[in-house]
Image (cartoon, rainbow, N blue to C red; front, top):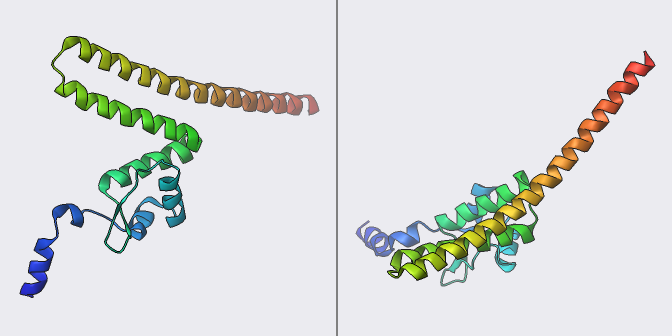
Amino acid sequence: MVAANEQYSSISIDERSLFTIEQVAERTGLTKRTLRYYEEVGLLPPTDRTEGNYRRYSEADIQRLERIKKLRDLLGFSLADIRNLLEADDERGQIKVAYQNETEAAAKIAQLDRADELIRSQLQMIERKLTGLEQMRAALLAKLESHQRTREELF
């Protein structure tokens, strides 16, 4: 029992908070193949690996996968759009860190300007999606109205 405790205590807290591909697949509802594909196409940064070269995922990886799934399934974004949104988020995160470490006002303003550019780009993508959805909605509502008029004419 002591040897097991010693072995467990030698594992860092970080290692204990890492998850196998099976655990992540079960938790997110994504297949292992999808998880590998997302890493391959750059939606998910390369995962940590064990000595045996098995993938290990962090809580941040799982949160990113949940966001990807929501953008894909709930909001209907393509993987290319998702990649663009996530890259903008990642760059804004880097800008935030740089901003916090910056002391010069002009540099801070430049960082804010870049963050605003990224946000505007994301908003344009979302607005295009909303416009498309509104057009689809209007077309479907028009069909329902047409069907209602046809019903009334049939009586």
